[in-house]
Length: 602
Image (cartoon, rainbow, N blue to C red):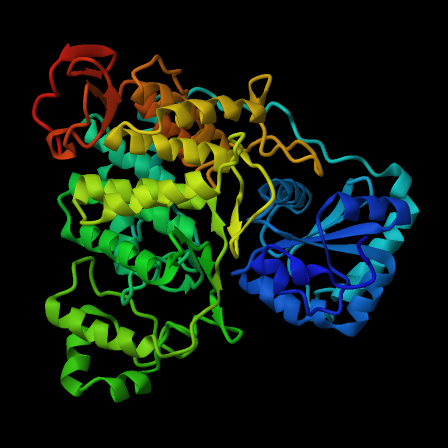
């Protein structure tokens, strides 16, 4: 029997939730017992959604959630519930859609007030514990919310999801190509936005479209990849990439590192390095693998994320003062560093220096040696917190990315790393009844069954099948199991009983959408086993581009090469899928011919 008069996050299976176990708030986990208590006590549910590496979540935890007055008021009038968005993506999606629909914008921390029967009626992001300028303090917000609820609780309306997500109008590939051309940032690369997220799925589409020889996406792809390789998004010392940059010129990142970013960018850079014969892109791909091996790998699988903060200071582990550089490096070494990196006298981040390259070019050997000396020193600093949960979805995407590095860059050991991920996921993340779990944390299985985990694992197995033709029966069973997430042609995010049935969204955000992952996994399972596969229609350019990438595969824009045994990838075009078949033949643009494709395109 849960004691709701205390903070119960000390036993949570989430690093994020445990970060809040010492708050004076009586935090509870989201579960059926907590929801029943809210109904029985007729208290408002205060649901705070975040994740372990969220900077402003940390700030709110240190301020409002540590304030005794705020805590006392919350404990008296509300049932405070903490949710890890990476643990419960269905709840996060529901709360975020309500926030965006009611305020016009979103973000984390994501704080939503709900009636005990789950009718949300107010949402907000960060709030300080006390008033600041024109901003209302958190305690005053709590008092206003309580007053509003008891006055209007009988007239609150449920927040409705559409069970049929709105279908996008049909787009042909030329329209998608034009969208990428017209919306690219001609000056800085990527899309025209103030904050710059790497457009993973758009890049996957663009490279694959370019490899067909039919599209006009090269400028979009190379401008974006040059920008992220040169700018502050990349960790130039240890490899890998931060989550996004806060400025249009890709200079200063938000310093958290997410596993899905490493996976998607390794996938992209591996394809791009072959497509454009680029040593710079190869360097970036190898840097990601180094970062994965040195900072993410843990007992056979890869950890979820690295915090942006160290000792409550964003980027502290990564930035340099001019004085530090002068003390660490000789005058000659500092001049060598300056040949490849901008070292502004006044700094570029709060008076300190975050490394940005002068040009999009591989680092010379003497600069590499200086960087290694700096990294050795950097490793002696206190490092950011690592969220050590192993999510099925993100590890499956990492496995796919390592397979791309094996195929297109011939990176030693990449195939073995990928197959090791397969072994661990199939052994530890799939139940006897072929349900795919969300992940593991400290050796224990996380609760929850979600579409993206099931679909991404199945998709990963289809890529593995091209290597060794193994796990066919497991693919078939996983494909059959996906049906539990589908009803009347709609995909649903989860099969959990303690929450509403949330439709799977179609938007890449920024990792592939659950909807597109599921459709691609189903089609690709049939494709690689030599069966008939359903055609995936295109989606909204720039928003549904993983779906558009999948559509290229089922719409005749890649080579489907059949053979009795797997073939070497270097004799096949970049845009190829290997399928099981009795004879060697290839199909392209709805036409099949005996033998391999003509001259392999690079």
